[in-house]
Length: 135
Image (cartoon, rainbow, N blue to C red; front, side, top):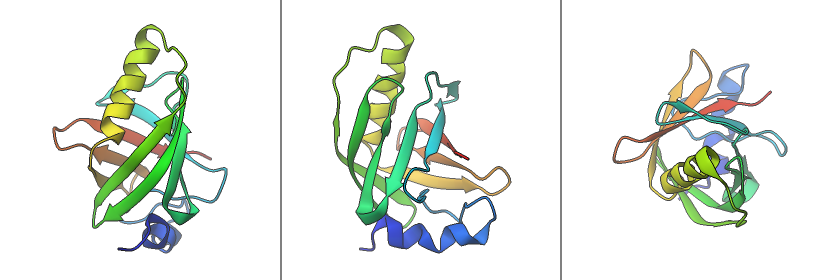
């Protein structure tokens, strides 16, 4: 199986915005993808996911940081096991974190929208994470 880095390295060269066809996002160190919505609900406190060299993934739910491994087979992205910090996240922020971590724990179908250079990750139950490349 190819690493996520190898799968997407060439794909992002296809568009000036750095997006490629049907592949998980991967950027150079320090550049990530904003998680803009969870199942259509806009996110708060700027959750981010970063795909790193060597099949590593890291980010923040808007409250706690997380990290782990990422693999991709075809259009299916699998993350984990993921480790995270354990700060208390009150109210809506805690609900957002729970939803993000729940989705990241499942195999996710990767769908790219070339018009907006955005990515949607869809779980088997239809729940989604919407990602937008950070400048």
